[in-house]
Image (spheres, rainbow, N blue to C red):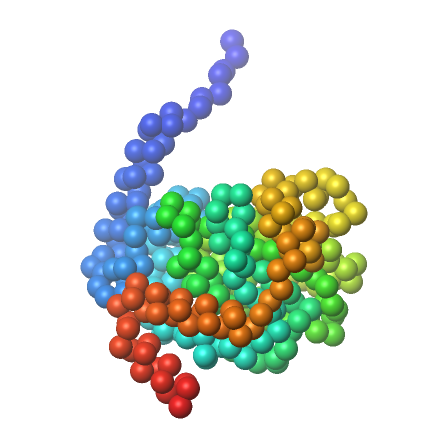
Length: 278
């Protein structure tokens, strides 16, 4: 008399997903060089998930990313090239992790120190690549902690930069963001957010969490992901860690060597660093 709702069989669902991963790989092959390194099974799965397992949309998205990577060359960006953007610690990889061991990027938009649209985007891309290369085995996603201390509309990035940031994250780093915590954004941010949120696809939008120090429920959500002992003081935690640009730069230079080795670019990146230092 009453129809029963059918539940997808997990085994069948997994088989369908595996078949789609293989089909997507076949669709973008043959691959060579860096593309062959980039397009792993995990990569294919992320692009499929980003497009709700629609093969045609996923193929188009992946092909656009491969085209972008071939021209932008994100894996070739070195710390020395973007170091000036990081002088105030407006964006850096934290030494601590969330409860699942994932990489954490700390963003402090109130410490904006340049007006270079291209420089800011290259710095962002560099830090995204760095966060990914430092993800522990078995983890595909990172966490963003955004501290709004000192932020105002006067030092906010232009809407074009915000839009391009969203496009890069969503279109070329799909399913890399696990969750983003926006800590104590001022009321004036609401006007900025009303514009920016239209650049976000639904999946990304729902990963954004507003946290207020006086709102216990929002704090509880953040503490599900972070032990208060590791959270910096500016995020309501107990960790007295501070950003040290010189120390961070040394860490990034070591990571540049690791990144170059991963992509097989030791000679190319080494000569570029020499040019930048020269």
